[in-house]
Length: 589
Image 1 (tube, one colour):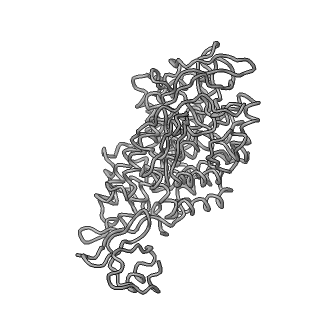
Image 2: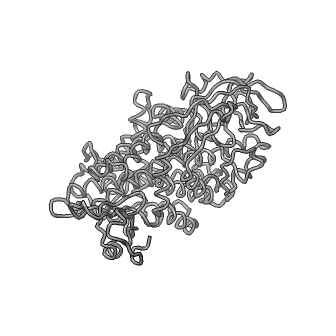
Image 3: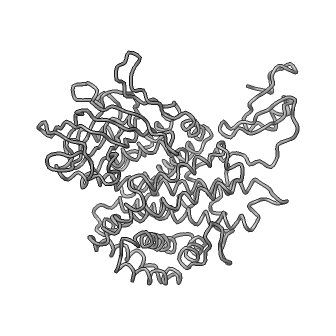
């Protein structure tokens, strides 16, 4: 509505929404008084009458900026790990993702979660989940930019790093929609265990056309892949699965049983585990049979989850569902672990992204908010908290993107060995830190942070998921122990990464000497402490080698040398908080 040109009777309009960038001009011209800022829509609410005060000292929303280009640590990580050639595409995505419109898609997709329709109005099975258009907007954006599959179509060095940056950016807009994006990306290496299946499905997967229609995959412009592994009685112990696979011949099977968690149930096909005559095996189970009829996959209900609200997670029953074998009978875990490994990488990337969002929001709020006569960002206690949040965020980003580079180098023995051990290290530690980080960032906004419109409660609710998905903490630590016991080359690759730079920092050197001795005698009871220390050593080495000096010094002095309290902001003297905060602040909004 153009308030500058419209003639309005005195009492004709009681409330008006005016875009933020027209606040002063439109408000003055219309004679309206600002009442409150509507964060999600990017508008000020105006009213005539019943106004008791002028709203001041409230930060503008953090919107209208390049989520990639404004993140110095992210840009540095992408270039450091070989993905600098993707700058233009990343800046284009970052600008769209950081717009007020895209941020609103995230709020709306969570406000209106998916709905399950088990039957149509005539009583026929429908088994369909419907989503708000905002969710489809997010999916369209992600697929169009190749976040779901670009590395499999583009074999350039650094392709997995560039794709990781796309996921990092998208996760800050809305975390739930990245689940099907991640699973589709991770499905390809598993599908390649069955070359005929890969040849059929990969062209659909790498397509950059998002097609949400419920149709057979061969009739669609693109396809997404989900996963269904766990069952009620087993959870992470998939060898306890009871779902049965009956051979039909020619690599085809009939599957009967259930799955306790089936994420993104409207995917076009799912990788599932079932007990075949030769043991636990992996299968590709599409939503439609080859004859064009719906497959026997019944959606029982959607999970009512703590977070990840925009993404549907279903309980499913399989009543003789048609599927095809992927890999060999009895080798199901070995086959699907290729998918699991890549989704664990994404868990670390998404958690690091959440930390970046939390730190950016906290700094933005503190910069625009005053208390006790001065800006929050200028107060020493707040500066200590903000700097500490940034240190944790940058360490997580450095580790996640170093790991992404290891996924780019399949032919490099060092990188392959490092990937095997660094994946559980990053998955465990970065995901563990995410929830504490989100809670502290929320607190920086005070009461405003506790209100849904700030986006911080959603960040906090979403933060524990990556620590649970694809293996909770104990499962991941046991995986790391298995790698140490069975793959000495992985331990050697890890040691080489740390030792190459340990002497450059006294705190890191002392920490590494103690850790190196403890690596020779790992135990299950002490696995969490060992994995935590290994992750810290690797983060410290990465920052000390090529990270920002102020961040590296602060990380090593606190996380490695023990000069740190038990809460964010409990820093020792001498930390360069000014340089750290300045690096992380979003300067162009």
